[in-house]
Amino acid sequence: MPPKKSSQQSGDGASGTSVNLPFISAEIGKLTKLDISSCSPEGFEIWKQRWDSVMTITRFYELSNETQKALFINVLSDDTIKRMNNLGQQDVQTLIESFQRQVCGSSNIFVHEYEFHKRVQGSNESFDEFYNDLQTLLNKCQYKDCCQSSTRMSCKNRISLGTSRGRYKVS
Image 1 (cartoon, rainbow, N blue to C red):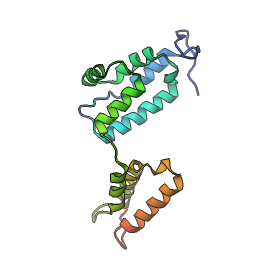
Image 2: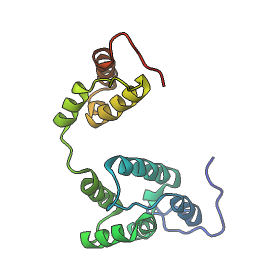
Image 3: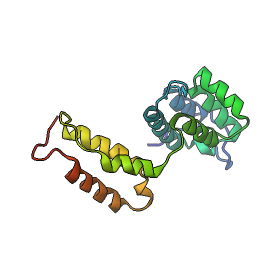
Image 4: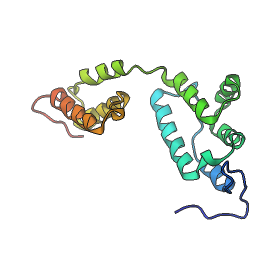
């Protein structure tokens, strides 16, 4: 259900529509601060997933670039703000992409595919742990950009070849 419009709305929307800044600010305030100096690649991906969710809920990208950046600063640690300031005047999406490159490094899908295809279930690893790790590796392979059916088939093949024969461990 969309948020109720308050009397404190602003006409800041890029398309000329009014937006609910108190609602947007409250939703953004619920996010944990991004600290790229101590963030792991997996931690960044989780943070970005939450960020994208809030952006969808709040229709954040309808705001002016100036307002977006002012709100974005509130989810950054002091160190991350300093790094942002060194990057110059960029829009929020470009800043997030830059932070992602800094935290996760560049991505080589061939390396990810190799890691996926050599992955086998450990002797003391439950099937659930193995399957979750396969899903994580598979997402890095960018098969979803090709077609969803190849993603499912690749995962099924890896399970068939990578599980400990004759014993499925349930956690």
